[in-house]
Length: 237
Image 1 (cartoon, rainbow, N blue to C red):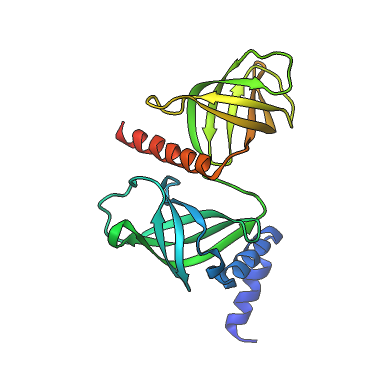
Image 2 (cartoon, rainbow, N blue to C red):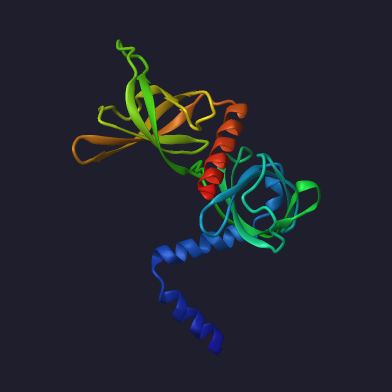
């Protein structure tokens, strides 16, 4: 047995079962053809976890593609060098969340050139980029005899859902209407939500992880733009 194979076996047995499964999953993902994801909308995040661009992945050939921005502006204006990024999207073709890594650089007419693209992960979870917030909001339970709005805090938001904090007690599966003014110059938004997770904090305070219901494509685009604007405003402070 060659020296390379011996070291390979030692490395294999020196890793936990979880690490071996993760490596095997990554290897299989890297071998997949990326072209089926052409046309997918993606959220582009930098190494430090900031989303600076939402775009449509176009003309995907091999490990190269173009990114057509779907939001106004970006957080990397003036950048000329290739930037390592992570692309996160949801493929309606196979109903899975998709994570792709690569580099991007500015191209002509506001289009970004994506290169060295590698599929890192596919999963059944429809995971979206979340931005932390601390905004006063209100919730009105659906299917309740009470029509009074109850106060809460919007703790974070993504295209897929939000997390709210309140002293009111609810159950998994409960639905409510969330009213929140996401930016000072915007009218309050109304969003239908359903509770998926509950975290009980101290002093009878609860955090509810919720998904949005009945969102149209235009609703999703509006939330994406708001998330983008929230991040941009934070950088200006």
